[in-house]
Picture 1 (cartoon, rainbow, N blue to C red):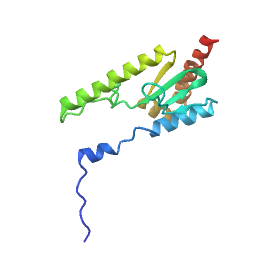
Picture 2 (cartoon, helix red, strand yellow):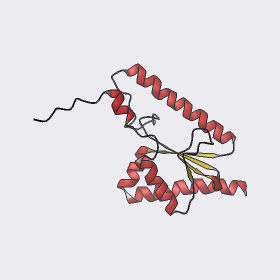
Picture 3 (cartoon, rainbow, N blue to C red):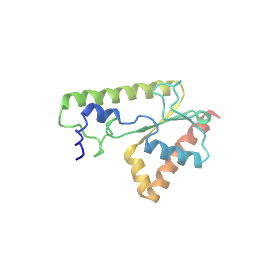
Picture 4 (cartoon, rainbow, N blue to C red):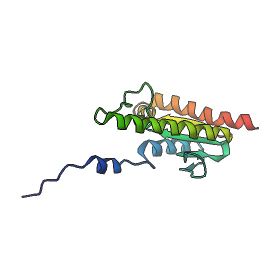
Length: 149
């Protein structure tokens, strides 16, 4: 007879949530590398440690999860009903921290681009969406280089 596993506590479950090298991040990094962009990952010398930093173009890219960063208008961005006040406060702190980091980066002359998890999911499912978003992203990155020349 095998022992029955006891269910994971909330804390154990949440401790397994990755903050670096998530699937959406890796997917986007591979696309950017294929497009010829060279970058640093989780660059700690900048505010907010951007997921991807492209020094040549002074561009910081954040790959934000819709839940953790409260993506407005996204159905993946809901506040859990249990312990509602705790989650609302926690997620709102994330949003405020993000805005402060973005402001600091822009003050330093670094372009900030946010790519949402739901956009990456759409890119994985649909080739047309992938091309459209990737084109928009590369245009945004290249735009900064024209400004500094």
